[in-house]
View (cartoon, rainbow, N blue to C red):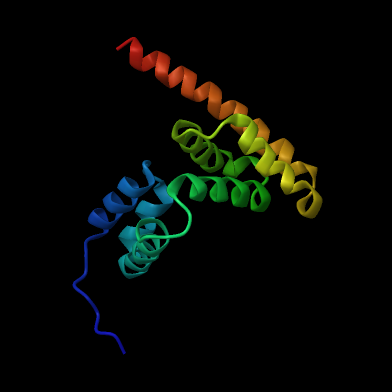
Length: 139
């Protein structure tokens, strides 16, 4: 059995996951506050998946997130999560046509809803990026 490590506060854990994700999700803060041991495990897993040397770079990981979210959660409540990953991918240099092609690959096993939903969210994400850039220039 592995010895337990020093416990971190829920706020510290919530701050760390928000820093890594680039956005504060209310669900993460709730989990960190009420189940800090669970959040520590998630942060460890995040380290293994995202920060250790790996075969695929961060840009590819974003594409994987987009595909997984579009396939698994083709529904309006998850749209902000998918758009967040789409915006990050676009800002990292993915071209809209590249993202759309990756989503097209999913049509055969998963259905047309994945492509339609994914591209719709991507177009909305592109508009949000334009709006955010315009607001930043006007400050």
